[in-house]
Length: 397
Image 1 (cartoon, rainbow, N blue to C red):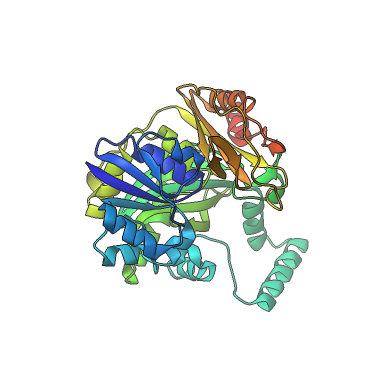
Image 2: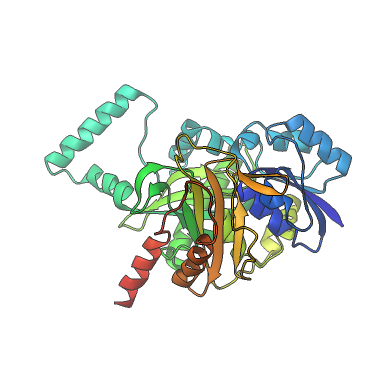
């Protein structure tokens, strides 16, 4: 039996540890540093090592003879943790520090997209040029020029989609689609956040669009990196804007799973996550068939008052002791445990996630569970999934 290590302490890492612990080939999952949720999972053990302490993480993995390490946070990947682990002969899922620039450096990503003719917004690294470009576009709009106006409208009124896959060299294994809600307040209003909720799959991505994303975005990205001597391994997450012309344009890349998208996606995953990770590291993901629960999944983030700005921590959370339904899971993000009491330790605190026959039934299960959990100042958006529900109503009329 093997040991696994998940690096990070948020909701994404709790979900990864929970899923890895279900594998028949894993007997212990360590999480560094983890949170109160991962601490209470069967077969999971928190380790008091910070996610950015690469030296101590390497030493721990060597001492415990860890067979598989999965990296959660972006910063640790950009710092080159995968390179360090690989040098020590340790199996670590994720891109090299150089490949992680795809997320860590916006200028690198934009220049890369331009070099390989992958659809995205036009860009410049110079503030003066940016101002001039915006002024020109606005003038063209004013006098009826259509060219750049189309691009502006696509990025302001299009639909944002997350497309997640696993990559091993030039092999690509599509995993899932999802859509999240970045704005803090209902109606997609208020300041942007790390994400207030997500659902999977994304209804907008039909078979045709899925094929288009693979051919126009994912495959050119993977092949482009390989052609530049930067082979990619691990999760690749493309944030896309789908305009009225149905062209997938890249907003950003993540070189790891997103949060809170991970929680609904892993709720739907029936395949053994450890087997998938090993297949990537062994270079044969083309031989793997991924199986999914046919139901939809939706997650809603419960946050602390003041988020994403100043918020209090150390607040006791009540209601977590009530048993969850088989189709509901409460993933922890910003929590810790003190003498048996779960306390808040971050702005985004929990992600309540559920499966349902459709988005509406999953949503009902989530909000029914949320009503039982509270702490002083807790809040959440009551309209997660509204885009999917609106699309369903349109399709049925």
